[in-house]
View 1 (tube, rainbow, N blue to C red):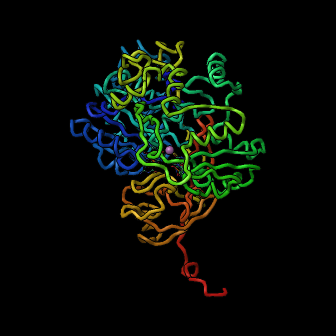
View 2 (view 1 turned 135 degrees about the horizontal axis):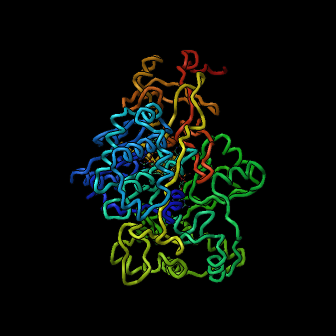
Length: 556
Ligand SMILES: Nc1nc2c(c(=O)[nH]1)N[C@H]1C(S)=C(S)[C@@H](COP(=O)(O)OP(=O)(O)OC[C@H]3O[C@@H](n4cnc5c(=O)[nH]c(N)nc54)[C@H](O)[C@@H]3O)O[C@H]1N2
Ligand SMILES: Nc1nc2c(c(=O)[nH]1)N[C@H]1C(S)=C(S)[C@@H](COP(=O)(O)OP(=O)(O)OC[C@H]3O[C@@H](n4cnc5c(=O)[nH]c(N)nc54)[C@H](O)[C@@H]3O)O[C@H]1N2
Ligand SMILES: [Mo]
């Protein structure tokens, strides 16, 4: 979102889901939507059915890649090298969209000069993708009338995640694949309402409606409404909070709906920092590992089907959710718990319904103003921005370079010079394998919401490796092996996967109580977004000797 906001001035995907059904070209870049966004993927499948070509850019031949016309299996962390090479080929083949570049962008000449070194040969050498495949995707991008470029964590969870995103935006600008129906950029969001969380100001530098905390006019508007003084400086993001804990600058934390003891990179270190806090409060619907470390647990917040409100999805569509069942026992809405806490701190915030909260938001956030509850119900959801109660904006963004800030509107979208930067942790003779981590269809994040019940779909953790590596290490499918990174060791059954190229290993964060993958991952972060490099660590796999496997005799 930082990358999109930098170029376009708005932190959201530019397209709507329907557009992927009618586009000519779909590029799934570092996204395994078949598993992680199955509903969006139904729209993708319709697009393929309607004749769209699909390309997958992923180090693994993932379940998504299996549906693609062509899979570009690149080395982990070589995305900037690949996109710069694509750009050079598009430019040299004369396939750029000249009128779009001239009328809507800035900085083309400098950008074009910066990609000049990225010949197909050089790109192929760094990315591991055959030159012919790079050429094919470049020409597909250059020749398509409309293209959708979709990306997710394979792009963002790197120490240079923002640069990765900028490099994909460059490709869209080069070919004019933005600001028209069917052409656009789709960063698919993680949870059902992660977009909504950001829109509502759950970011350290933004107030609701992406209004800047450090903007005095915006801040004063909120201070008046809430009758409080808001700190005038941006706060810390999640990784900065952990840094602040490390340096003793942050002494307490209030965690709502997150399980950082198991989801943070370099988990042993993260857990130690949480343990060391003077005061930790956790508000969750389950007693998580993080809650076990807490001084105070606020249990029984009502889950989503037990509460009224709205969620906002990856296409910026706000939809109503309605309370379907009554929460059990003494469980409260999360907002009720917050109101009770505010009351204890001397503030009487009175909202008699979720609609009252929403109407306050509408009065403060222009991009939400037109979305009344009755309109949301009548239309089944509305995309932002929606400025007026009796009109709708186009379903795609940036037809006229729309931005939250008035001064950004109508300005030209800048190309960004982006430099290739390989993963922080190189593979070495001691740790010769590249570990990347990600998701499976059957489980969810740290497993809190998908681990406690028996589902015929749910698998246990495995460490996936290529057939070539399995043979050279003498490892058979299902054999328990030891995986070690510079930070920790775990054991897991091996799974031989012919979708993996030699040297690549894949694990999930889904089963941390059995196999805590995040004991292996590295805490390197992208300073521009605060995102950790979950997608690239160096590891070693060792066979476990017969002695290690021996069950200890009682008393031993
Ligand atoms: N079933 C299920 N669905 C989920 C979730 C879940 O846990 N389970 N979690 C939700 C959440 S919070 C999120 S954020 C989304 C995430 O959705 P995705 O980002 O699609 O999921 P991941 O599997 O983490 O990563 C996507 C792909 O990135 C690839 N990749 C790794 N390194 C690189 C690289 O260097 N370059 C490129 N180009 N690709 C790379 C991986 O091989 C993987 O296939 O899923 C959401 N949906
Ligand atoms: N190795 C590795 N690690 C990763 C990733 C990776 O790809 N690889 N991905 C990263 C990503 S993208 C993400 S998003 C994080 C996810 O990390 P987390 O967000 O820490 O993991 P979740 O398991 O989704 O935890 C969500 C918590 O919210 C609680 N919850 C659900 N509904 C409600 C509610 O209505 N109210 C309250 N109060 N609580 C609720 C659940 O019980 C659960 O404990 O993991 C990150 N960690
Ligand atoms: Mo996520």
